[in-house]
Amino acid sequence: LGATAIAYNLTVVNTVGSNGFLAGNEGGNVVVGASAINWFASGQTLANASVVKLNASRQITIICGGTASSCDFIVDVVGFYR
Image 1 (cartoon, helix red, strand yellow):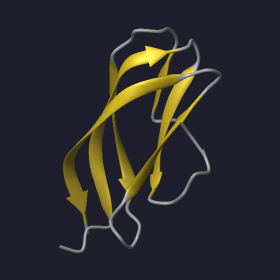
Image 2 (cartoon, one colour; image 1 turned 30 degrees about the horizontal axis):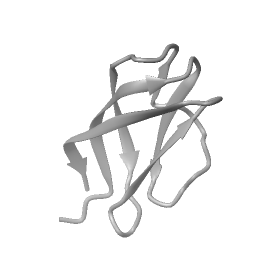
Image 3 (cartoon, helix red, strand yellow; image 1 turned 90 degrees about the horizontal axis):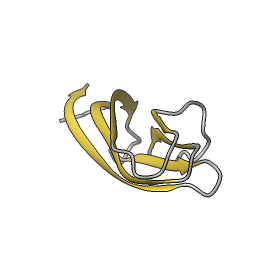
Image 4 (spheres, helix red, strand yellow; image 1 turned 90 degrees about the vertical axis):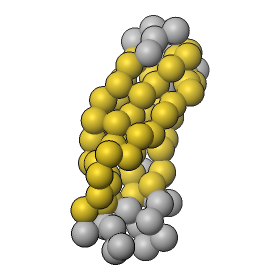
């Protein structure tokens, strides 16, 4: 289909830590420019919508950051751009 980017909902569950974040990037890009979602306590469930560019293989990279932070997450693709 020639998709170059996706619109998606990102949900974090089972958060650990008090200053965590997820960032969504083009596939293979591990440099964090901005977060897509942030949490401030363990055990939170939060969601946010965003748009991210796809790499040539139509992949994205999700980065989890913060001090002693982790989570489970869901990426729900709601649309794409050509």
